[in-house]
Image 1: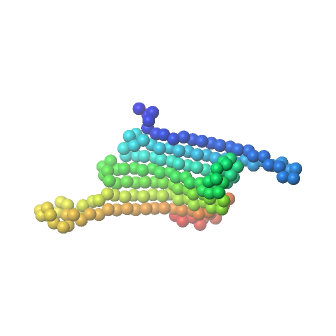
Image 2: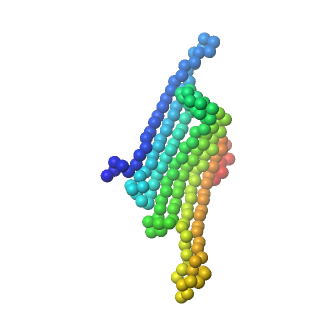
Image 3: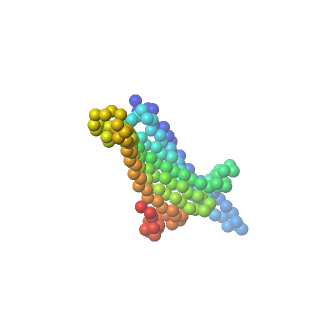
Length: 170
């Protein structure tokens, strides 16, 4: 039954605001895209995908929301994550993600892409060595964790300039 395998939604907004200063009329277009997705754990026990994407132009919240928080905070966050659990090794996990934070007041953007993490559960490499079942070395355990992260800090106006990508930390 595919009906309950995921939940979420997609919202797209466009606003066109008119301003008149000293008899001059001007229009300001602002946009927003919000995408939420959550996969039910029962849909696939080994894979999951989640998203909470919030992209908007700097003036969308200021021009369209009247609440105190939207007017003063100006912080936008997004994230995507994909997790894979290895069927043959249930305690092993691989997670790939994307994170984005944007301050609409200062115009600063922090982006993490890729954000990869691999981890294992406890492994007991000497559990089957020797005949003494209470030997100290049989309780020795090893865990492993690896992380790879690329990051970019820039402004929303310089995100797609070549210099920004040349300075990125991968």
